Image (tube, rainbow, N blue to C red; front, side, top):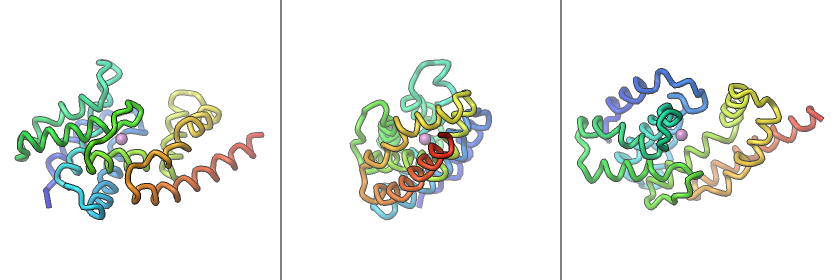
Length: 192
Ligand code: NI
């Protein structure tokens, strides 16, 4: 089993100043653990998947300034630490490719099992109880309130369960989706 300690340390150091609470280091930790769990069950290459999961959002803070998607910059930022911990050039290319396709909003389909899993678990963290927490925190931070949350739920979050690539993630998604759906319905009732 690959030792991810140094990559993990690198990421947590890089992300100490992230103000977007929805995509802070705690999101990365959850994505990493779930990716490892799903990856192990599906026989994925954990060395590639684990590194990609840890690094996938590391470029997010710079995106606002540079305009470069973090699906590209996160891989670039992670390059040196991957070299240091002994990843080969081929492995680094694979990690970058997995990160490149994790963002479903860019329309790039993952071309590996590892890419599918990262995309799936990233979406799983956006639904269920944790997804609700993140979406409300985000809505509050940008000042759009309850209606902003509901709009985001309708336009994006409630559609995620049908966008899973792997059957296992789809199973996890169904339960989280039901919870989200119930919450949204109850919220609408109370608001009306
Ligand atoms: Ni993410």
